[in-house]
Image: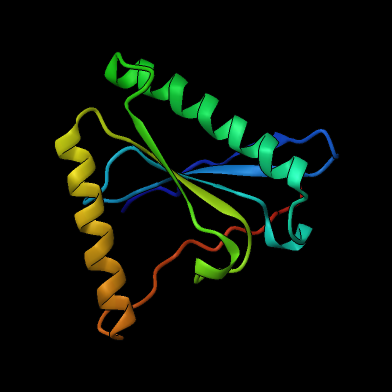
Length: 132
């Protein structure tokens, strides 16, 4: 049985927080989701900027440690109209090379097509803020 991934909580200048969770996926290794918990509403423009900076810093740190290359990552952000899940979030994937990037896009295309046709259950993680 897989253990539940550990989330990291990052305080924002506004006093709100964002959460970074590793996503366990056999098809996409080294995958993280940075989210603004739904119960905090939508982030302001400055909170989005701050969160993107947190995401990039985390991606650079992890990519450097795991792959010896601080720039071997991709960040995916879906704007409000393109999301299927409410709440602001960004996907961070450590890649290593262009073949892994191509694989990532192939997996995402297949997953989204299957979900669009109703052939695959939507398994998006639901990140809500849980007070300590």
